[in-house]
Length: 420
Image (cartoon, rainbow, N blue to C red; front, side, top):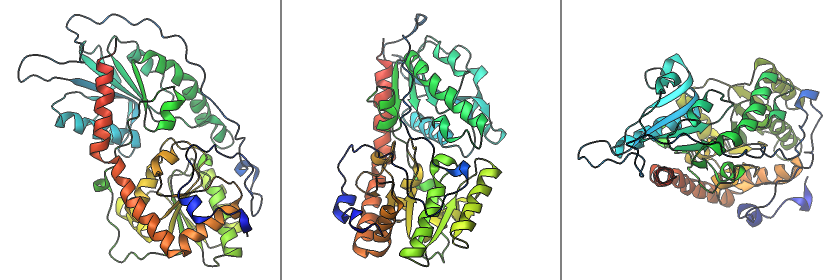
């Protein structure tokens, strides 16, 4: 199965940088329902950015270093963060809260504002209307992750602004199952270049996100293993269990993972199983995945949602390998979680994934699932290779610790403060 098409171990573990993503049709064990067919993978570049509109002049009292003041004992820098929406488990909100903790450790000041706020987090995030007109020396850090018309007013303010792109998924992945989400994604991607043109500095959480906007400024996700759960004491590694953690959505390609485990069970590992963890796009999409699993690999696929932190940690600790065949990722935090819990990783090198995993994962560009299955089998069965992947993964987590992200974040803010 796959024959000599499978890449040699060393080539897969140490791939050449910057290889383009293949767009060939993935080989399928069986054809799923039409809604789970592969979407058109033609490139979807962002629209060209419009000319930067004139900004209102900064008022008196503004300073060239973003709020530095001479008087002893006074706050030196004010950074307000602005989000389209905030929730207790939202990744962007989590980053904003982590950033605020960093700011306070530096003696800086500032609040988090959002257009929509989950009541469970209302004590930590202020409504966007409360931002009003900030003092002229305040900097604005705008987190962009979705269509956000309310943020246009923020970008029209005279304050210096840093826009941090968390990426917006292309709309084509959602038309079949959630047209409203597709519309918001399409509007969000169309709006992003306009917003970027209004900001003083543009950055991305990965080089991929930054490059989409013509920037080389990267402020990576701050990964804190201390916020993760603890595996159950009796957690045991299941050597042939594949795990993927991520929203149950078309661009995450859980349908391909189901075909993959069916292929493995027929040709390589009869006891291979797959565990999918994530909140569904909607009940219909979850049902479609469950139906595909029943058709191709009955009894071998488990789909779970709404796990506690400890339950999720146990899933990572029990996995034989973490496999990601997603077609669009701006970053993909679960890759770092898999590294932390010691699961070898096999991933498709799209979007921000290569910059996240570095040399710590087997990267498979080929869309032929027979080739993917060969590499997954290596990750599961070759103990020397698996141990090396785990070792590299543990080291890779350190590239996203507080120290590294703090340096990048502070540099981006200082660059913003010096703008204009």
